[in-house]
Length: 348
Image (cartoon, rainbow, N blue to C red; front, top):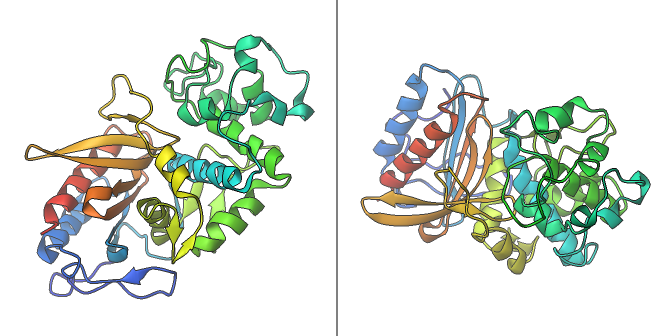
């Protein structure tokens, strides 16, 4: 474990000159002993697959703890939490005019893939907004391996974009929310077409660079396109920056990176989610309300397999990041949500 002892845990995190302003947790309104207790419980967790907990409040990094061999310099695969980074890049491209708006249709961005298989009026009607909201109507459901577009099937193909474009339709666009990474992979391909260059270059220039993220790894498809649906590896502090960017309505370090209009649109409750413990879904961001002793606290968050989260709690001015490799484990998301609740309780 890498965190200060109970006697020192009230001190501010180290200043690494990575863009974060630093504060001690007590100055930010936290009970240091409560935070130390959370870290002790994580350290005692028998699973041994939780890697990092970071907290920012009022624009400052106030707490970071690493576990099970991880430290501040090590990259961690945040899986589908990377979808929220892809959505942010869509917003930047719209801000710049490379994509006119979220209601433009998808297929015209893929002329090199013509003829498209199974084209019908429903497929022709799919827009960027449908992909962002997971309401494209494709026969794709990551929770159902029987669907041709589930992520496992896409990953087995040698062309992930072609796999998505050629999927049959199961329903009309906009009719139903169904979680499927193929939607976000198509957003990655669409971004490359719209910006006329590799997505990794666009991301580095307009998002990672301005956020001070100079070390990362983003898996690519067999055809070399960034896996927009996830598999992004970051340091814990850099993971947390996306949450702070959205808490501050698109500004980091005094510089605007994405428009406030986009941030509000992306994090808005747009779709109700069936059979989930969340309130809804926006543009690749999840929504939920946390009940704390009868008081509802609104939260939007990026979420990845394994329990990887970037929680943003606007009413508390707080961002909380968790990194965990409990991939596919039944406790992965519950554990991160429980830690979040404990962090909220630690706020004085």
